Every structure is written in C-alpha cells, then in structure tokens.
Amino acid sequence: MARVLTSIVLLPILFAAIWLGGPIFFAALAALGILVGLIEYYALTQKVGARSGSLTGLLAAAALIGAFYIGKHELIAPILAALIIVDLIAQLLTNRDLPSTLAGTATTVFGVLYVALLGGYIIALRVIVDPAPRMPEKLLTFFFAVIFAGDTGAYYIGRLMGRRRLAPRISPAKTVEGAIGGLTGNVAAALIAHFTFFRELSLAHALPLALVMGVLGIFGDLGESMLKRGAQTKDASNLIPGHGGILDRLDSMLFNAPLLYFYYQTFLR
Image 1 (cartoon, one colour):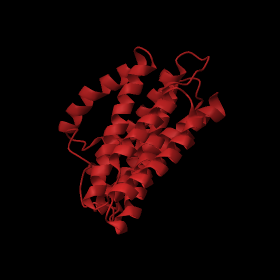
Image 2 (spheres, rainbow, N blue to C red):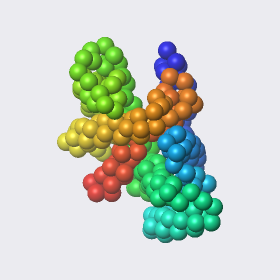
Image 3 (cartoon, rainbow, N blue to C red):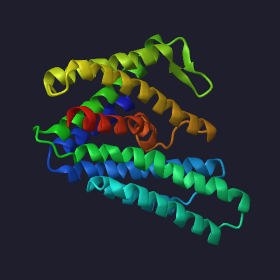
Image 4 (tube, helix red, strand yellow):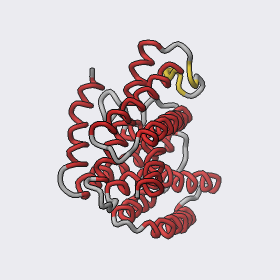
C-alpha cells in the first residue's frame, strides 16, 4: 500500500514538472534526485570501507548537471578531468591510509560517472530544442511511462506468478516471470504513448525501443542490486516509503536516459 500511495503523490509532481512551466522546473527536480542518489551511493561505499571524496564528487556532479542544462556537452570531459585531478590531490593531502587511496579515488569517480553522467541525460532530454511541438515533454513522458510500466509489471506479475529466479545470487526476489511482465508493461506503455500523444514516434520504432529500454532497465536494476548486495544492504536508503531510496528508483533510468537521448539525436532530430 505504501508503494501505491507514494506513487499517487509523486507521479503528479513529476509530470507537472515536465509539462508545466519551463525546463528549469524539471531540471531542478532531476538535479535534486541525481545529487541525493549520489549521496546514497557514497553512503553504500562507506559500508565496505571505501574512503570516497564525496564532496569533490558532489561538486563535479553539480557541474555536470549544469553542463547538461545549458547544452554544453563539450564541458563533460574537462569536468571529469578536473574531478580526477582534484580528488587525487585531496587524497594525497588528507589520506594517511595509503592502501585505501586506490579504492577511494575509484569510488569517487565511478559514482559521478554512474549517477551524475548517466542521469544528466535525463536533463538533456528536457532542454532539447526541436521544431516539433512539445518534443522534450513527449520524450520524457514516453521515457517515464515505459520505465514505470515496466517496473509495475515486473513487481506485480513477479509477486503473483513468479517461480523461477532471474538472478538468485544478486536479487533473490526477481523472477523470470516478473521480467516478462515488465517487458510486457514496457511494450504496452509504448503502444499507449504512440496512440495518445506521440505520433511522431512510429510503432516500428516505439516497440523495439521499448523492448530495448526494458532489457536495459533489467540490467540497470540488477546492477544497482549488485552494488547493494556488495554493501550488504537491502535498499539504498529509506527515503521513499515502499520504494527504498532515490538510487533504487533511478537504477533503470540511468541506463536508459543516454539511450533515449541518442535515439532522438539519431532518428527523430
């Protein structure tokens, strides 16, 4: 019940941020989610003793978000280069435990790549400039509809019919039946999107795209579960009732945001 009630409260806020007002409203919401997700990631790494530079990582993440928002993707490489340099200098000046420096720096940089770089493409989708009416809003609505339908289908079909475990070593609760239910939800959402608001996306593209997004979502979910399993914790945090942490909600989105952005650049632009 907590899962349903949370969705009833949060989904209208999300879609209002997408459709009402300018890009700044959605970008601010997405930036908050990315930064909180990165904080949760760094908290996970502390459970396995990694001494990450969370401050430098968060500053780099904020800079990446800014680059995506203003459409200056050429700034991504300099920001990441600066992160590596600054974090290594910080480790050199402050870390007395030399064996931990390699893991600490790797953890800092990977967190920014995983959460902020991949997540930044969600913001990049919103600030697209396209002559077609409401193209950024349609892309993001398609994005969230496909992902949420997949998550919902996987959760409920898995609970009702799940028998065969999908990845027992990493996530014992996930089942093959749930994965099939999730992919069915992905395709159903793509069909509804095409016939209701996104005619620019043909069915010949929408359905395969939804399936690829569904498969990437499964791997994104399992990848985050692997990180949590390594940290011996069930959820990234308890921030969202019934859902866990922000990172637990971002997992499948992080793999799919770059896919949809570059799909648009290749086929719809």
